[in-house]
Amino acid sequence: MLRSALVMASGAAVSACVSRVETAVAPMIAPPAYVPPIPQAPMIAKAAPRTPLGMRPELFKKAIAALDRHSMRIPSHDRIAIADFSMPSHRPRLYLVHLGRGEVETILV
Image (cartoon, rainbow, N blue to C red; front, side, top):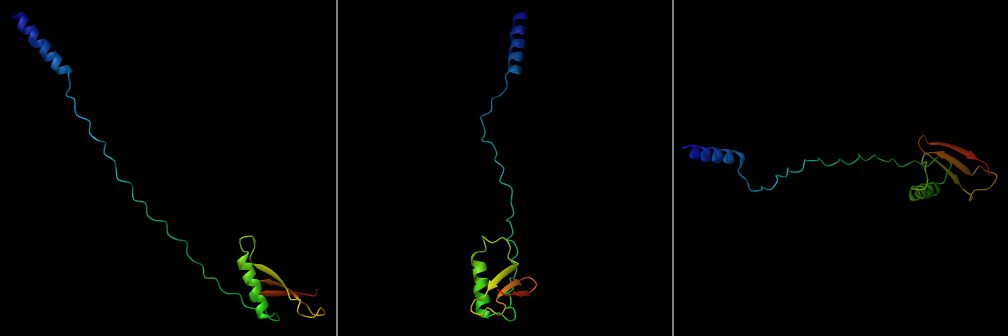
């Protein structure tokens, strides 16, 4: 009887130490978090600058087109100097134009 009790006790002890082995389950991958799209920057309406008084309109348009074409290399776009060499030299023919305020300074050159 002692022997059978010992066998029963050892069987119970061994079965208590052994755990059930589960098969490996693929890990659950969480769905990626929703990232809202980045909104575009608002477009700023660019008002076409007006031709200053006393300056030829086609010359001013050419100067503005050149400023737009070379805008990546020019750090400041608020002022522009335009020389009109088609005018006689006794008249002011260099125009310093402040595009933001529309002010013009003429210089005799």
